[in-house]
Amino acid sequence: MEKYDRDTWVEVNLDDIRSNIHTFRKHIPEKTQIMAVVKADGYGHGSIEVAREALAAGATSLAVAFLDEGIVLRKAGITCPILILGYTPIRAVQKAYEWNISCTVFQTNWIKKAEKIVNKKQGKKKVNKHGDKPEDKHGNQPDQDKKEESIQGRKRLSVHINIDTGMGRLGVRTKKVLLSVVKGIYKSDVFQWDGVYTHFATADSQDITYLNHQFERFQSYLEFLREKGHKLPAIHCCNTAATMTHPEWGFHFIRLGIGMYGLYPSVYLKSLNILNLKPALQVKTRVSNVKFMQKSFGIGYGVTYSASPGEQIITLPIGYGDGFSRLLSNKGSVLLQGQRFSVVGRVTMDQCMVSVDKIKAKVGDEVVIYGRSGNEEITLEEVAEQIGTINYEVACMLNYRIPRVYIKQHKVVSVRNLLESINPKPRKHTEK
Ligand SMILES: Cc1ncc(COP(=O)(O)O)c(C=O)c1O
Image (cartoon, rainbow, N blue to C red; front, side, top):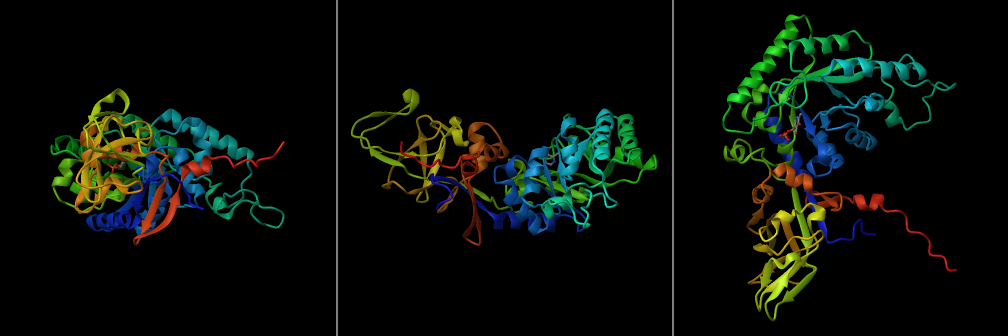
């Protein structure tokens, strides 16, 4: 049985993910490791499959935005370090601890509350000398999946301190708070201090003044901690953009997001030709209807386009309910048989229309929404420009309704259809 029945799908080429990781690997110092950023479902590509490929290609840890995203990876059997880049609510701390997922920390109060929570729960749950759950009378671990057991019940909650050097989002903003967070971590036996990092706000732009300013600030915070006698854990500050322009700032890790997917953080950075990245994602669909207009005829809601006599209009089963923006109404293009054609009328929730000339379309013909066909290409950057956003958002907009098809060496190796997993089992039809 097919894993999906609709005629619209996202193709993710895992060989491209691998190649992009290798490209960054060669670009950064040998001692610097790669933390693959797979938040937002791997920027729309599918977090589990991308994470597995990235780890196989040389990444050594992963980053997500919040705990649930990390647990998805753990449940898929991924055991490497995973860092939550966002804020973890206090109520979720125990779970982060149990799943051995690292939290980003920056508030003294959070440290105090988290310590209490873990201590309280840990007190109730007797641990053996290895920090695991109690063994049964035969000396075996409890009847849980071994994989799960290997990541649960560790003694300490791993934390990375975020320093806000100019992003204005999360992170400690004074040396005083930094010191109190560090002290809070040290004086408790609940935490393990695994990292200290910052995030750059303008690393993708041509003007490097602010970036340099942030980097200097970060260094002064690190120096301050050293002067106070603290041995620093893993240090990291580079996203894709900073890695491209300053590989020497890699320290222990780079946090590699958009570049791993073969996309550039900005048009400016792409124009520098520093690295040759391969976009891993394409969106495809199939023609569901073909009409030749006998007379002028309105197209779509609001009739914002009127087809002329003789015009060929095709219908495609993709719309804004999939993440194909309504802002592409009368603006976007698609590719059919290596040629570019315009979206006409308004993009609707599940469908859109395209005017096709010169060639004859048939129901079932493959159409490229984003990606390559012949010598033509529709890039996420082009679409981003049309709808006034960035390639990051165009990728993340592709939602759970579109199945992800994974390709390796030109073959489909797996398919993920989230609709399949939320569909209830069909009820048996019983006659009255
Ligand atoms: C804290 C942090 N680090 C790293 C990244 C990865 O950035 P990029 O996708 O530009 O490489 C992000 C992405 O938003 C982030 O929020």
